[in-house]
Length: 170
Image (cartoon, rainbow, N blue to C red):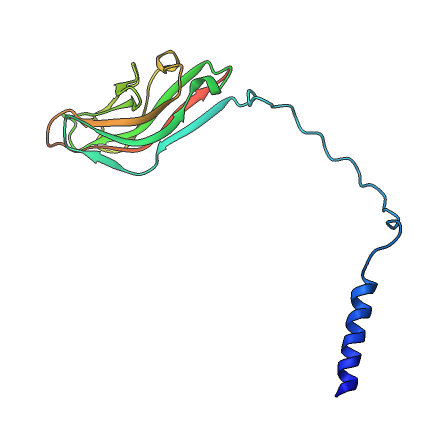
């Protein structure tokens, strides 16, 4: 038994002291080929279209006062140099063609509707509706954006599906 302990201790000491690296580092292998050079894009100005999805779930309301839905936090148009247009798009529907669904892009930070962003649909099945260019209406500061949906007649269901803010460069 004593021999086994001695063998174990001697083996441990030999292993422990033999693992130190003395002397120079061994030879290095050849360098691999140079990687492919990427394209310049330091400020992201090469994107032609940037899409922000505000919500992707179905929302609805039967009230004319409206409901704020979804949020795009900390949006700042100054972070997108070279953008020359902005569009608001949404899938809309209503339960009655005589009571259109009304949706607007909403500035939560200042509690105001973004001018010229209001979309209206009298379709009883979902259809895509888009605004004109609203870039000049977007504040030049950091804001939180949302969607304001409302029914045009109390008690009639107005619904929204997917909706986006598109920023575009020529």
